Length: 108
Image (cartoon, rainbow, N blue to C red):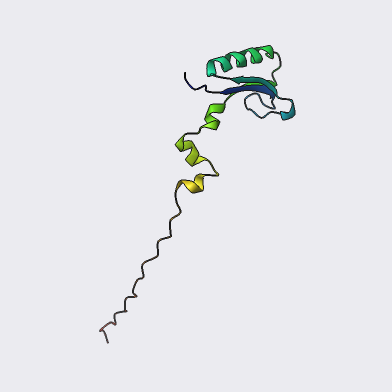
């Protein structure tokens, strides 16, 4: 049996329907958590169509499985782990350069 890829479907009032800035996060409507994207998409469609006349409502599907098991590249790019991705290196010391002696001109 394959591992379920969890998806969360929720929605609420948004300031701008083109973005996901929810106005009142205390009143979000959580539709549910689903074992695969197809089921989550069905639930998202149903919830979205139920509020089709309310332009200030938006529903989204969140891929929870991506948050729970990030790929190595995603782990490296996370801000709190970025410093751990590459070990710190010592700054290279500047090579000492000898000052060249000024040549005296032979003109008199």
